[in-house]
Length: 550
Image (tube, rainbow, N blue to C red; front, side, top):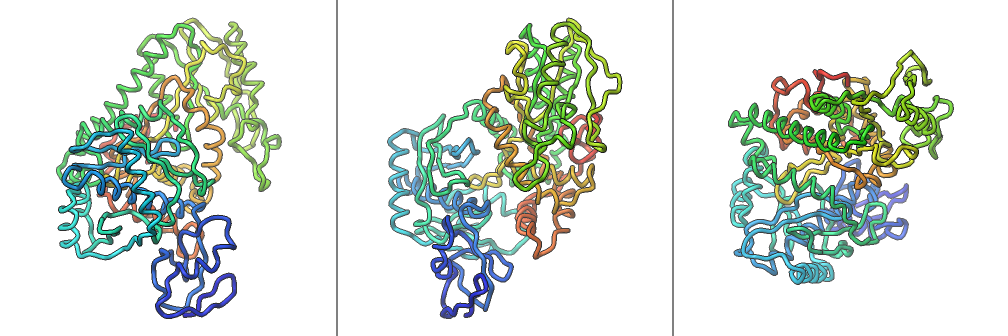
């Protein structure tokens, strides 16, 4: 077989696998090669070369390569705990959610979570890594697949596959341990060398390297407020009986979605009410600062919070930090020469502090409005003076950054972090990254409100994520309270809006692989009509029909 890499053609034997090609070119890369693209198709390294092809590589530093590493380590963790505890004593092992550089896992059955067990699991995982055991993928007809997963007691996967349209499933096997994974895997356990298992909360934290430094394991960075918020969300999902996609699809087929939507919306309204009460209970608070990453539903949340504050006797006034953008020509630029609207320098921090201080001191101030068409700040006679019951609800990505409001007394500020922290899993071992939910939200909203293609949104997403990592995530634990805007039903709603947009991205375009991944992901869900969603729902900010100006 002839394989072309960077214009150089090399002959390989007919039984050669892509890992052989990767090993020949590994020294040319700063990070471990994880996957290949052969003739435009992404392939795992254990696959055989079946035809002449042109090949390029993805490493652990690429998003898809990093996800393959994470899946591989998870399977090693599951194999290790099964080896140590025994299948008969393990009722359930669930990968719940991600916190910082760790993945929180819970275990039920005839087993106790202890430091000793964590050490034993990690030791067994290191044995598996040193043995370089192959991770093989094999296609099973659906009947045979269901038999295997029943033998392992994986009821979550049984429910998931009930709604699968294909006649079979690809399962992975590691030394006799079978499991299903949504996405690619590394060829053998020797690729996974960097991990740690520690006890945390009621379970284990499976610590792994960050994608930026995939060959370096950093100590686990605890984020207790984020952990508690995610834990509450998973407990609520468990309470209503929808922890995974299979259970969501069951609810859809059972005509329970109307009540499920109402339960979820009521739960969010209850939480918003609690946040409003806490803000009002602090007598000196005049500024409610709201921040969160892209597509968190900040605008809808700010409006709903304002209604709750009004019900408690306050007079809220919404202010967007976007209105304090510097004029377009004064906006800092990034390394590519593009305007960097995400950085703090894009905001007139001094003017914001001056206006807020004046109002705090009892002065009347004319507030600015930023004209995004002209790229300039304008004044249209919007005068404001803070009265005794007035409270400013300020929304923007820099809301939690202390530099944004450096001149305001700390006791005058109440800080809220909002994000769409998805608690729904595909199944017990395949979690749904919160970034996927936010990306789908943004694809749908951008198409509706900005006439932007899915290709453009996906293209811009890495830049958006970098801005979040620099300007939002470092300050999230500084918040007084957190709000989770994810809705257990929303992906079933977003599905029918997002799929046509993603199908518009053609093979050969750089964004094709991400679009294909998202389409495969959405294929797990049955669709839900948006007609029954309340008009004040966060979901309406993305699919349209909101009663708020969003």
